[in-house]
Length: 348
Image (cartoon, rainbow, N blue to C red; front, side, top):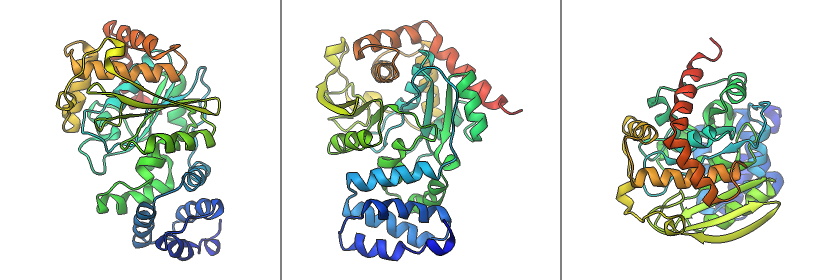
């Protein structure tokens, strides 16, 4: 798209500030315009806030996600198995980095994991932050990411490195200090490796059905969209979890509770985390067997979801048993060590 073609932002803003929905073409086009690099930070911030205040539609987000994929730096690894992501929206009850730890356990189970993510915007520790604290290299080229996925079975795909648009919206969004659709709702859907299996936590109950419908439009193979009704953007150990299971173009809705899996409920505070270095130590302690209890159990339950959508387990209950063995046998800890070492050596 030429710079001359990137001139639609004012028309888009007029519609959004009048609370009118964008057409599929307009929604797709605004992302293409963002990728041109011609918009100012003020225009980008205005777009983010206007979309948030109007409320994005399913069609708008799906069209924007398609455009984001089209302008991304793509990763195309040659892997056997179902390429999977564990990236969630963030924004729920503060915990340690459960979805990042889930990626490690899921990869240890033989599922190739392309973990999409970023640094934290409003919270204390994003996936990039905690992986850096664990010693991993978080900035990779597409070729380096492909090599890690093919040789180690896991790679971290930093959104700002693979999505030019994410790089453009990062500064305005971080300065605003609010979560707009780019790093929350849309971020988990635009994996640069085109992972079509996903356990995706959302921070609001009304997003469960909405995100599931978007995933069907984007032709995901198998996904669990989850929200802990006590405010978690993960499968919760503190109460029931709302689930929308996407598979074969259909959506099944149900709820699960810890007791169904032989696990005890806990209080939300039992799952809390802290700074990136503190969360890194929590993950190390769990994977090494030094920490047991609620924080370990919630990781196992979420890893059950990753192993299930990734095709390594036939159900969540089977996934839980597999996740437990991967941690207890030390395979998850070894996978973390292998990933950290390889991420620093790749391309050297």
